[in-house]
Length: 379
Ligand SMILES: [Zn+2]
Image 1 (cartoon, helix red, strand yellow):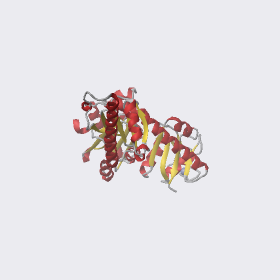
Image 2 (image 1 turned 30 degrees about the vertical axis):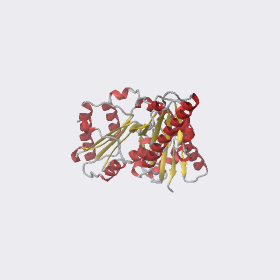
Image 3 (image 1 turned 45 degrees about the horizontal axis):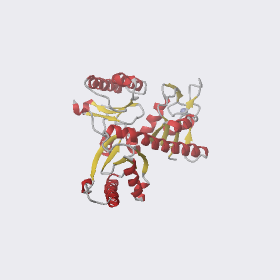
Image 4 (image 1 turned 90 degrees about the horizontal axis):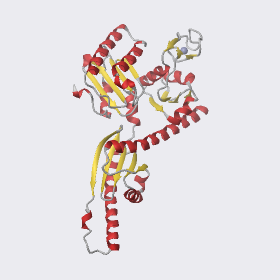
């Protein structure tokens, strides 16, 4: 059973899943996010059940309900066995009769979604892969350096950079000043070697951002010598030992990455609010966003992380506030109670290939004042 947890998803994973069809059998797509210290981590099956129960409230045929129960049993069987939750979120695509079982543990949160349809709901996974930035983390001291490539919160590569001029060439008998110059020249050569490797990996992997770690002096020497193209990608620096564990490095770098992400979200929400105000291809608030996403006009749905909204709406996504009429005044469709309008919005976004962006922190505060949801529109 060990290989039943897949590795990190890639573009290839996405393309393969996007082509998968099971019109008769149906595919279960499940995204679950777990708080780092939440009690739900200990009971994954309960979290799965609650997601599937909510899914059953949606419009499924008798045949689909039976197929969903089949998948529920197989998911239960899996989580009864030895399984250690190590990520922030789980993503599962399953169709037992067709032998589809792909389970991903990611170090990044996702919106909790359960879908049962003729194809895997891959849009959120695509959005996650699309939004995730690849970081190059260069850690340097006076003699050695390491370059880590970090993607989806994990170290995917760790290159050790050796100094070609070992320190012991500083033989005795030299004048102090000459020895000092020799050491400076050595450090400079070492720094240039590290920059060469960084530039090469930058071309190969295309780091979105670069972080520089290490003791003060070597770090300063490196930053001073970085060419402008690389310098402009440096998002932050931090003090650390050269051979700190991955865990320590990820922890130090993590807060810098988090800050960069929050900055990007603040920019997005500020843009969204401005664009909605001037009515240029953007809407904000439930009343306008929900119908837009149901109609397939949304390019990017922006919502507060873990947003929940009870309410009533017709199948066209027009909302009825309060008790309201039983029939939508706009489209004459029946208005029904919705357990969670967020799921309606996200489901519609998935169905129409819209991107989904969840925001946290101060961007979330700003968006919450406008109902917690908004969208950039295609037209
Ligand atoms: Zn309506």
